[in-house]
Length: 232
Ligand code: DC
Image (cartoon, rainbow, N blue to C red; front, side):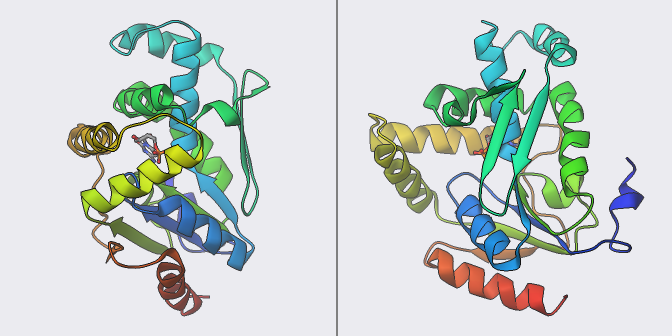
């Protein structure tokens, strides 16, 4: 599918792109927005996590790029997106509950720097979002996946605050983690996502940049709704 097909004309609803680093609140606000608008919530990080899950399941190491690439044609990946829920199936198995472990999280950032992995996931993401009425969140939605998205936001927040949010999420999910390690993992992942040669984490030139350090999720959503409503 070419990028022209994803332009602003001929769609039923808007394509809303939300990018930013880990722990900045993208998933929370994307879900809330999708719910408010009755749109699909497209969690693209879950797709990179699914590839990481498959790599771990196959017993491959992150540095085995050629073997990871060779695995892709033998992998079926399906994503069910609702306004709030996301289910990911790899080779027919629902692996949604296994996508947020620290191992999968670390590996997702590494495999996402492999260009063949990104190329393989691009049509998957575009197919889900092409019809419009979607809130898509990730790292390269506004720059690469949907460069003609109707509304683009790039969220930012202080690393200490992002690490605190991530630490609380992990503890709430029952993971035995230390704050300092969580912060090191998060900033390491950001550095990797920002510095990779393919589709690095950078704001699209036409994205609105929002610092969420001192904004509760509801305030971010209210601001975004005002911008979006003006486009509807
Ligand atoms: O958003 P997340 O934490 O679930 O994403 C996991 C990893 O996937 C992240 O470290 C970078 C990668 N990713 C990406 O490269 N591009 C995207 N659009 C989404 C995620």
